Every structure is written in C-alpha cells, then in structure tokens.
Amino acid sequence: MLGALPILLLALLYLFLAAERHAANPMDKILPLPKGMAEGMAALWFRPDQLTGQLLFWADTLASLQRLGLGLGIATLSALLIGLVLGVLPPVRATFGPLVTAIAVIPPIALLPILFVALGLGETAKVALIVIGIAPVMVRDIAAYVAELPREQIIKAQTLGASSWQIMIRVALPQAMPRLLHAMRLSLGPAWVFLISAEAIASDVGLGYRIFLVRRYLSMDVIIPYVAWIALLAILMDLALVFLSRKLFPWAHGAKH
Amino acid sequence: MSALLSLRDVWVEYGDKIVLEKVNLDIEAGSFVSIIGPSGAGKSSLLRVVLGQEVPTRGTILLDGAPLTPECGPDRGVVFQRYSVFPHLSALRNTLFGLECEQAPLLARLFGGARRAAEAEAAEMLDAVGLGDAMHLYPAQMSGGMQQRLAIAQALVKRPRILLLDEPFGALDPGIRADMHALITRLWRDYSLTIVMVTHDIREAFTLGTRVLALDKRRHDPHAPHRFGATAVYDLHLRSRTDPVEDEDPAAAAAIDQNNEERIGHG
Image (cartoon, rainbow over all chains, first blue to last red; front, side):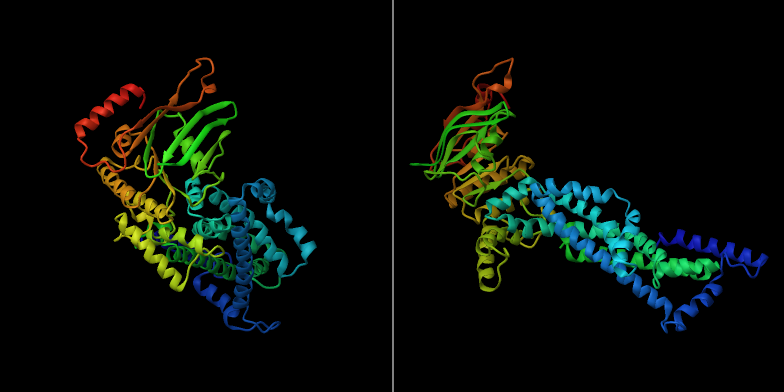
C-alpha cells in the first residue's frame, strides 16, 4: 500500500504540469490531459481501422504479446535444456561454455540487421532477436546454478543408486526450476526492449510499432497510454511468475507447509 | 569374523603431495570404526577413497573380497556434515528417492502399488530415526538434527553394506548431538550395521566406536612436509559388538579422552 504513494504523487505531479501547460495553450500536445488521452485512445480501442478492419489497440497488444511469449518461451526452454547439460556435464561445459559467453557479449541490437537480412522482415526475425538477446544470459545463469549444487548432494544421489540421467532429472532439473522462473523475471525487461526495438524498425503492427508511428505526429495522447499499458503488462507478468514460483516450488521460498 | 572391507597398501597422492601412505586396514562386519586425527591428516581422503569418490594412487580396496568399483554405488551409504538431503523433496520423498532410482531406471518415479510399497518402507525407516511425524516437511523446515536424521534414513533405506559418516554431528549443538549418539547406536544394533565415522570429537569417537583409528604422519621431513603421508598410527580395539555401550561411566570416558588426547597430541 505504502508503495503506491510515490506512484500516486508522480501522477499528481503530471496532472499539475499538464493542467498548467493547457492553461497557457489549450492546444498543447506535449502533456495531454486524461480527457485528451481518452479521446486519442478511443479511436484505437473501439473504432475498426479503415485499412485492416481491426481494433488497432487490441491487434497491437496481441501481436506484441505473441512475439514476446514466443521469444521468452523459446529462450526459457533452451536455457533449461542447454543450461542443465552445461551445468551437469563438465566436458560439455568446457566445450560449449566459451561459445555461449561469446554470443552473450555481442550486443543483440547489432545483430538485428543480420537477422533481418537472413530471416526477412517477418515475425521470425523479431522473435529471434528476443531469443538471441535473452537466452545466453539465462543459459549461463542456469548452468552456473546447476554447477554449484553441493557436491555432497550429487555424491549422496550416487550412493543411493542414481545414474547420471536420474541425477539430471530428479536432482538438478527440479532444483533449477525456481531459478529458471527467477531468470525469466529478470529477462522480462530486456525482452521488452528487444521487442520494441524490432517493432520500431520494421513492423506493421505491435505496441512498439504504434508508439514509433504516432511519434511522427507528436501524439503523446497515444504514446503515454501505450507506455502505461506496456508497464502494466510487464508488472502483471512479473507477478504471475512470482505467484507461479511460490505455488509450484514452496520449498524454494522457505514456506511453512 | 572375516573382514568386510580391506585396504591393502593404499596410497593417496595429489600431485607430489602425499596424503595417505601405506594404509593397511581390515574392517570387520558389524564394527563401528571411528577415525580421528589432526586436520589435514587424510581422514576425509580415506573416507572418499572408501566411498569411491576418489581412486587411490596405489593399492587395492576389497569389499566382501571383491575389488571396489571406483565409483559411488548403493553398497556404501554416506552421511555428510551438511548438504546430504535434497532440499526440493519432502522427508518422505527424500527417503523414497533411493528406492525409486533402483526400481524405475528411466523416470526414477514409482506409481500405484509399487509406490505404496516403497512409501511404506520409507515411512518405516523414517519412524526408526524418529521422523515419523515430520514426513511431509521439507528440509528447510527442519532443524539441523532432523536433517541429519533424514540423511541417515535416506542412506539406510538402501540397506548399504557399510555406512560412512563424515563428521555427521559436527554442526549440531551438544544436546542434539547426545540424542544423535543414542540414535546411531540404536540403529547400529538394530540393523546390524557396519559404520565408519570420521570425527573431530575424540570423546565421540571413543563413546560410539568399537574401534578407534588415529591417522597421523609417522615421519616428518621439515624441508618437505608434504612428502610424507599419514597412516593409522593408533588402532585401538575397544570392545566387541555385544558389550554395553550406554552404561559407560562418563568420568571414565573423560579420562580415556584426556589420555588419548595426550598420546595422540592433536585435536
């Protein structure tokens, strides 16, 4: 509850500044009032686009969430598989660890032209940018976490008759899962950055595309609600991941019963 | 009695550092061997070699007369000072783990009747170590003593030929430690276990063990201290399995304690 206070104060500050500008110039576009934003957004919310017949706001949201979901999903899955194998099997880590590190240090945005050239301007390149942007960090995190499981635990599992495969699926995998959800939470921010970048450069639908499109008309009445919407979506995803982790892996959160 | 575990001329070296030299040991079935010695005298190396976690540089180890495979297997159970239970499994499922690995090679999970049978066996073992009421707790919800009880149950459910304890009670406070001593003595009797325990606590070594081994270096080269390894310098057979252990006079135990501390000369 207390955490809502600063946010409320910022909103009030914005309203105060916007009102002040509008008092000086009723046509001001830089700091729109809520009424202006509602009018600007109404067209995107309720009126079908003349060209495509879609409700643009919802089409943008759907397209962006689909790209984000695919990118995040592929990155998470590969982080789990590659991270687990790298973490459990030292020879594999010695062979492929440097490659993962090398990919991780390349700024993903620098790869975007290559992706567009190689994969075209469609969905694949955008999803690929998200995956390349966040997967290496997640892989390294999971691999390091699994490699640092106490040696005693692995030995103990062996003395209980577990094979390497059984150790992988019953000891390493379940313990990597809460860490994976944590890595997803941390990757959400970068994933949004790469999504918006890809959409800003080449797209015809999506939250990032819309923001960069209406920027040409100084349409702050659309940009600000879009940014707020993106923030809300990101917060909801974060909360969902925390909830999921507590629900599925109570042992990792020191929960009682 | 015949020897269950035999070490023949075992050497352990790391690079040019010799940790153990010429260790010859015969451990009889049903004995409770305590291993003491100063830090760095190779107590844990000896345990790791017996466990199969490390291969001796020289020498052979025989279990039941057959050479030991140089990997950890279900014939040797182990309890470490810490980290020997799985934090993501409840007590019952921690204990179930060994049974599941054996019976379900691919999934390491049991279902239906096989699972119920295994759960009954695991629950019985948890009862035996006094965790009957804590079967559904996760290790993070347990005290240190309870976690060690769980680690013992987990190992014993596999019926190992030999149980190795690496300073199992070192991290526990004295009251809990006394409870654990009573527990391990009872389990050792009830399940006819053979136990090898490494400990820093000389008193513990003498009250629990039927035999106490003190590891230390026999020779010392001041210019190259790492070139001489440790071996069993004292090998004391205290009592046979049938002797009473509990009614030992604490004063006498303290006297032995002091005597040996002087003789061995190290903590």
